Image (cartoon, rainbow, N blue to C red; front, top):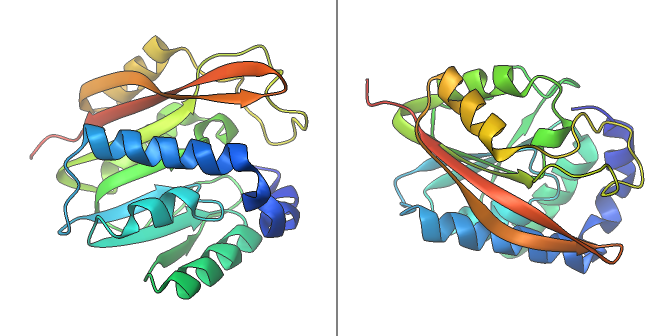
Length: 205
């Protein structure tokens, strides 16, 4: 995950985009409808940004941690959580978006972050290691597109993803029960961009 300085600068105004707010809300609804969230669960929001997804899920799980490379985004999340009376853990990631994720967790979620990660298969293997047995992931990102989604391409490693490739990467990492469906469609620059939600589980061992 690169382009950290740009995200630091954008943190204060990030939530002013209705599109981003609506996208995160739709992904939260898709996750909640796909999974039976539990107050016993510990959850990690990988690439949490200002916490739009983090805070949308927080009251339905036991604990939630937001992880990001951007200190500005984490600071904004902390302020929002305090204002809403929600306890949120914060985990700073190194500039590659890897390193210690903490945990283990019952669920790892992510929204529009995977396309900033150079080595997604390695990330999926890392996710598996940070899950409780029987835990899972719920990962939302763009379907493969022509590169028009981002006006600023710094830090963008992938122009979305082919769903079958994501499924293969998850299975190769050791995940089971992989399902990929459309979570929502986001509208930008007069165009529609489908956003998928991939869910998968670690085995019980």
